[in-house]
Amino acid sequence: MDNFMTLKVKSVSRNEAFVRSAVAAFAAELNPTVDELGDIKTAVSEAVTNCVVHAYDGGDGIITVNASIENGSLHIEVIDEGCGIEDIDRARTAFFTTKPDAERSGMGFTVMETFMDSLEVMHNTPKGTVVRMTKRLCTEI
Image (cartoon, rainbow, N blue to C red):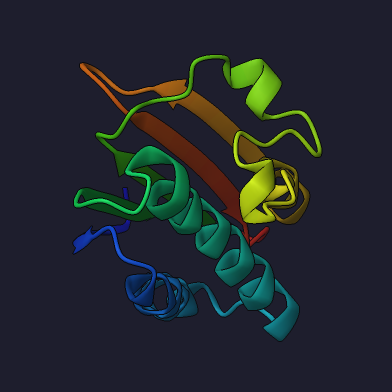
């Protein structure tokens, strides 16, 4: 691992912008393009918003964000200890939402998958969810 960082923030929507900016600043050492930075910020925003809206349902909780750089790739984990996802495969289906009355589009995981090179969603132990994303930014290593 070339470099790493960890953030822990309260699960409130105002922290989404802070986390998004912090991860983008961390990724800057890989000299990403403006488009790549936009992709990273969008994916991180979606992951953090999922924690606020779904994992803790607007209640108190902690979101942990780990980011690391290794061999020209940015690896990001967004971790919560909330209610978890009952059916991860179904949750990753485009337009699926558990909150249709809250005008949620059900596109969060689809967006993350579109903007990142890889996406893994798994159960956290003992409760919650881990979202792992990777973006390759440097091919000359």
